[in-house]
Image 1 (tube, rainbow, N blue to C red):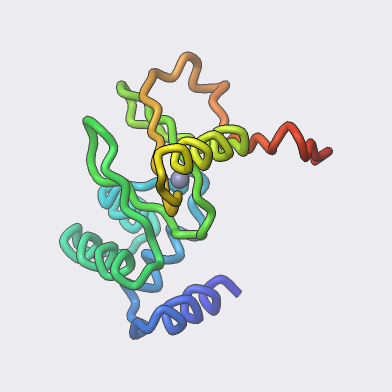
Image 2: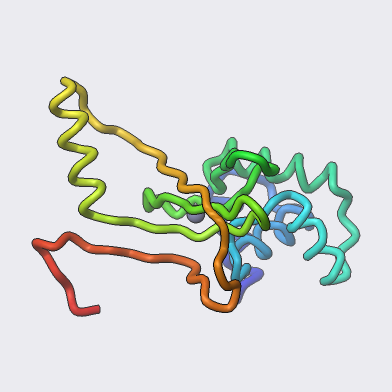
Length: 156
Ligand SMILES: [Zn+2]
């Protein structure tokens, strides 16, 4: 049950289960385009018949961020974008015209970053890569791209 999942996730994060929190978490968990601004969440709530104010949406998203449930991104030229924190460290490409976001993960880039950090005398704990461009054809964009290491080529 979806309701049950959102309730469980809230409790696990140490947050009290309230209607706005459950509704907002469900939207983030079910969204097809899972990179959402507070306004996107607010509009989806309205569409679902949930009258939760924009200020509440912001407050709940900030609480989710503090609890480690969501990640907040500050991409150039746009509003803050939120997504569920799934623990996979992926990177993003953002359309400068529409604000559309896709994500990618490339094992070759990650190996290279490890190497760069090492050569500079650092460990690599985290990285953020954001590519900026423009959507060429909105019917042909992909939500994500995962490229595995050339060494460990996989069939899926
Ligand atoms: Zn993402």
